[in-house]
Amino acid sequence: MLVDNPEVLEKIFSQCKTIIAIHSENDNIIKANLESFKTIYGEDIPVKFHPKIRSQEACYDASSRAVAFAKKHGTKLHILHISTAKELELFDNSIPLEQKKITAEACIHHMWFSEEDYETKGNLIKWNPAIKTANDREQIFKAVLDGRIDEVATDHAPHTLEEKAQSYLKAPSGGPLNQHSLVAIFDFYHQGKISLEMIAQKMCHNVAILFEIEKIGFIREGYYADLTLADLNSPWTVAKENILSKCGWSPFEGHTFRSKVTHTIVSGHLAYEEGIFYEEKKGERITFLRNN
Image 1 (cartoon, rainbow, N blue to C red):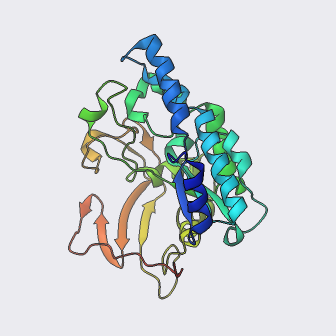
Image 2 (cartoon, rainbow, N blue to C red):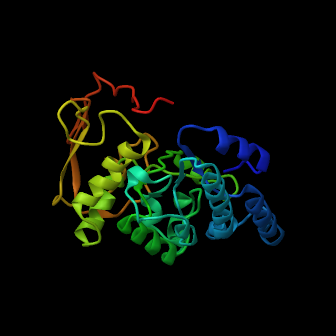
């Protein structure tokens, strides 16, 4: 949430009739942190300080202000890619999703990596908001399980490897996650951390409920046949030759997943089968149940 003018925010939250979804960080706090690290390291800041620059304080400040505006005006608010344990106190799990006004999302990378991984992954795991501590990771996972976090997403941003190879200040934030998000969460299933039913709930059902998307997110008669088929017991190792994203790299390179996606069906059309794409038909426009 880069808007820091209270009058503008007041107008947005008081007049918006549909859900407001925000990336929530206080840009002024981030800029102040960045200047502090520049005084020490100049233009050569180590990437390990990314979570100190895009800090817990920056995330919580923006999220708490947004929640306060939403509560004041009764606005529906969805905070994207939660990255800190502290923000979790802003969310509720005592009522059904359909009745919630304030909801939240977690991303696969914030559930998988921690700040310790900057040592080996470097800019490949430079995301905004930043991947933070192991405790933040663990608490976010707990919140996914107990319902304070309502859905799981990817924040897919396939920057090129050349872009990522630049210095910290020049390298863009984000990375490719579409291909590996499902198999990554299946690894959590194999570890006994999450059920298959909850995976479907957090990655399919709740997304459709939350954004009131029409005929999607469930296997039901009359719904679009958007399906992913997977072999839960088919180990494979991520390598350059099996990365499907056009950017050609993944933060999961070298990791062996225990499950494998075998087919995807988009609007009833077989779009992918065992490494082969069938692109004769594209996806269809999403429509919504809401009137605004």
